Image 1 (cartoon, chains in turn orange, green):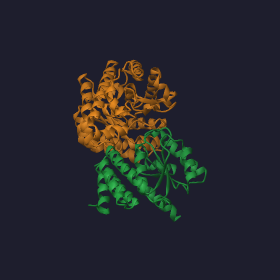
Image 2 (tube, rainbow over the protein chains, first blue to last red):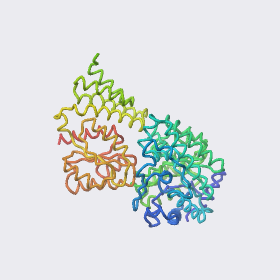
Image 3 (tube, rainbow over the protein chains, first blue to last red):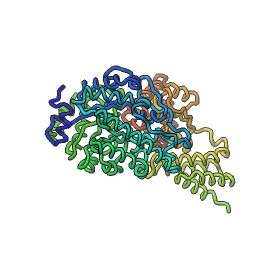
Image 4 (tube, rainbow over the protein chains, first blue to last red):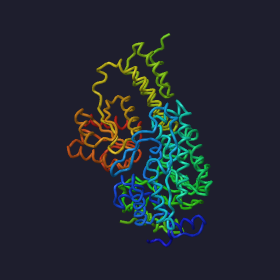
Amino acid sequence: MLDRMTPMERAVAMAKGETLDRLPCNPNVANGVARIYGCMISEFNTNARTIANAQIASYRRFGYDGVRIFTDLFPWAEAMGAKVSYPLDNTADLAQPAVKDINDINSLQPADPYKDGRLPVHIEAMKYLIDELGQEVPCAGGIVGPFTNAFFLLGVENMSKLFFKNPDAVHHACNVSLETCIRYAQAIIDAGLTPTISEPMSSSTVVSPKHFREFAAPYIEKLVHYINERKKPVTMHICGKTNKIWEDVVNMGIAGFSIDNVEDLEKCKNQIGDRVKVLGHVDPSSIMYDGTPETVRQAVIECVQQAWDCPKGYVIMSGCSLPVETPPENIQAMMDAAREIGYPVDPEKLARMQTARQG
Amino acid sequence: MAKDKAELLEKMAKSVVEMDDDLTVELAQEYVDQQYDGYDAINMGLAKGMDRAGQLYEEEEYYIPELLMCSDAMYSGLEIIRPHLKQQERSGKSKIVIGVVEGDTHDIGKNLVKIMLETSGFDVVDLGRDIPPIDFVEKAKEIHADLIALSTLMTTTMDGMEEVCQILKEQDLTERIKVMVGGGPISKSFADKIGAHYSEDATKAVKLAQQLVKEEIRC
C-alpha cells in the first residue's frame, strides 16, 4: 500500500481533527468489485463469502477508504414480497412490486433480516468483512431508505399516483418499510458495522420537496434517529438534485451527505459543510466510466478545489455508485489523484496540477 | 349553453395541467359532442396541457409524480377523442421506434417521452422495455422509421445503446435512421461518442425529434 495511514487511522484522525496523510477517497466501486475479483454478479445473490471476498479484493487492490455490503436497491422490498430478477452477470432489478392490488396493502409485513430473502446473505457477508478488514478500514452496511423502499413495495408509478389519490396508503407502506429498515440497521450494528442510507427516490429529480417532506422525511428521520441513538454516525446518499432538501436532510442528524454530480459541490459545502461532512462528486458516467485516467485526475482536482476546506470534512467520492464496467485504471487514477494532492491540501499545488496535465 | 371551441380547448389544457382526469374526460366528451375537430383537441388542448406540464417540470414546479398524473389525465381525454379523429390526419407522420435498452426495466422516462412525442404528432411504436439492440433496428426498417429513441436509467445498458448505433452503421442506415438517447446516466459526451443525439428530458426530446426530422427533409 502506498499510503502511510490505514483508512481506519485516517478516519479516526479526521474525526479528531488531526493531520492526515491524504484526503479520504472512496470511488464507490459497488458491483464492479465482481470484475476486480473475477466472479459473476449473480453469485452475490446467494454466496455471502463471494460478496465479502470481492469487496476485500477490490479494497486490497485500490486501498480506498470504505467498504460496504450493498448489491442493489431491492433486497428489502424482495424480503417483503417483491419479485426481483437476477441477470447472470449484472445488477439485480425489480421485476414486480410486493403489492399488486392496493387493497392488499395491509398484508405488508416488515422483513426479518435473519430469515427473509437475500438479507441473511448480506448479514453473513458483513460478518466476514468486519472479521477481515474491521481493524483496517471502516466497514459499512448499506440500507435503502424507507421511502425509496416503499416505492418498490407499491410499484414506482403506482406509489407516485397514490401521493394524490391515497396518501394514507403511502404512509402505511412507508411505515412498514421503516420497520424493515430499523431491523436491518440493528442487524448491521450488531454485526459491528456502520449503516449508510441510500434514498434515490427522495431526489428532487424524482419527487417534489413538498412530497419529500410529506412522505419521505418523517420516516427517514426516524431511521437516522434510531441509528444515532445506538451511537453510530450515518452517511446518506441521494442521487440527482437535492439542493432544495439539503436543510431537511441535515436537520435529521446525519453525519455525512454524499452528493450527486448534478449538484454544485461548492454550494453544498458552503451551505451545509458547517454541520455535516460532504462526500462527492466525480461524475460516475461521463468521467469514471467514459473518461481517461487524466480526465479522472482533473475531475478529482476540481472537486477538491471546491470542497477541501469543508469545516466538517471532505471525502473524495464518485457522485453515485460506479457502473460495473468502469475501467479499473480510472478507479486507480482517482486514488492516485488523492495521493498526489496529499495533505494538507494546498490550493496553489492544485492549480499547478491543473495546468500540468499528464499523458 | 354550449361552450365555444377555444374555451373548451383551454379548459382541457388546464385540466391536464391540474391533473384532473375526471374533468378532462368530461370536457373531451363535451368537445366531441359539439363535433369540433379531434386533431385540434389533441394539439391545442391535451398536448398543450402536457406541454405546460413539461414546462412546469423544467421550472422544477412539477416532478415525476405530477407528470404521471398529468399524463393519466391526458390519456383519459385521448381515449374520448381518438375514435373521432379523421383517418387521413393520422397518416404521413414521422415515425419513431422507442424503447428501453436490454438490461433495464425502468420505463417511466420512456413513457413520458412517448406521450410527448405522440401528442406532438409523431407516430410512435413502443417496443417496451428490456429490448435487445437488434430489435430496434429491425422494427425501424420494417416500418420505415425516421428515428430510434433509446432510454435508460441504468449505466449498465449504455453499451446496448452503442450497439444500436453500431448496427445502423454496419447496415449503412445512419443517414436514414437517426438515434436519440436519454435517461439518468446519459450525457451529451456519451451520445456524441456513439454517434447519437442527446436529449436531457422529455420536453427537449420532442424538440430534438422535430429538429432531426426537419433536417432529414432538408437533405
